[in-house]
Length: 148
Image 1 (cartoon, rainbow, N blue to C red):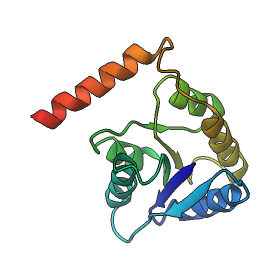
Image 2: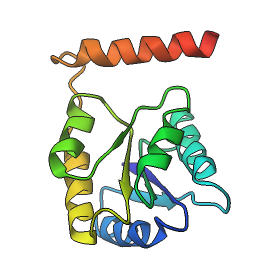
Image 3: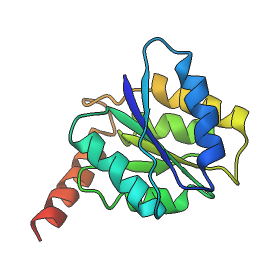
Image 4: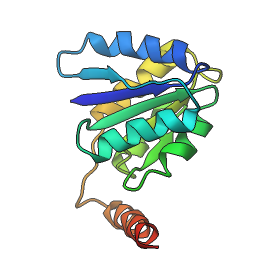
């Protein structure tokens, strides 16, 4: 799996922890798409790379995880979820087919962040499951917004 990471200056320390954590997985290739500027720029870079098919999933970090989540969700075709616990991470994948999770480096510690990432990567969306209609409705809303 190809995973894009991105962070602003506040999220950088947690990004480095997660990058090191993921580097030990043989099934994962990680790229840091962080760039100078605002967290919206970083979120757009990661989101656009996923929409273009260069990466399958992304993880974004800022101080709270909120700013990068809001920003990533502005990229047409992206579903990003703020995750500060493993249950939310699992549901982000299984119920919402979120391609991006976000975390706040000032909110959670490194060990919890590693657990969140591991749970999210192991969880998969079932396109025939009970949440399929909700995700289809999100995608339809996204299409409507693109055409306006």
